Length: 221
Image (tube, rainbow, N blue to C red):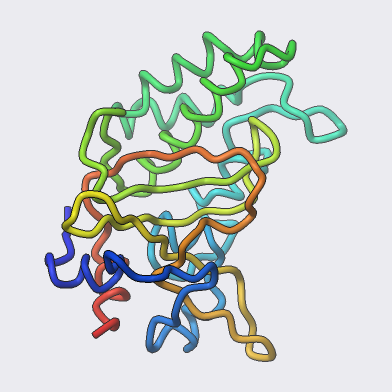
């Protein structure tokens, strides 16, 4: 996986300084097509993607081609066999997390909070893996993290990336929301918090970033 230099990490997450909620703008990130990138697009791929593409967060979580079968209220009722029959073969690293979903789904639907938490972490892990990330265990390196905020165990509201400085303590967040030509929404770095405060937060430790993400953060000099 691509990595940032120690100097870049210290620049993105400077120790002993204030880390404002809204951070600072990454140069060039207000240009098309990146300006249109959603929060999940940045965190999962580092570049603009149509929401209808395979393995985007909207496709995996929300569409009929994704992980769930839904009722008329768009509440999951089961897992989508067609989705998992494909991913289990092409992405074998996702199989253990598919099993976690299968083992916990009914209890989650019945309201068990532990099962809901297990499903939330498993689906986020699958989503990260399908987009090329290597997900570490809970005791893995905390230098790079992927964060999701959500109000439901089967959905998402916001995604961000965390970068830890070389002090091993200071972590700040790099995040954005969808923009338009009329209202540019650039990527922000050195954010002191992950937005959508108050919602449930899930954090994955990942082994480095994708090249597109490193390329964009290289613009911070």
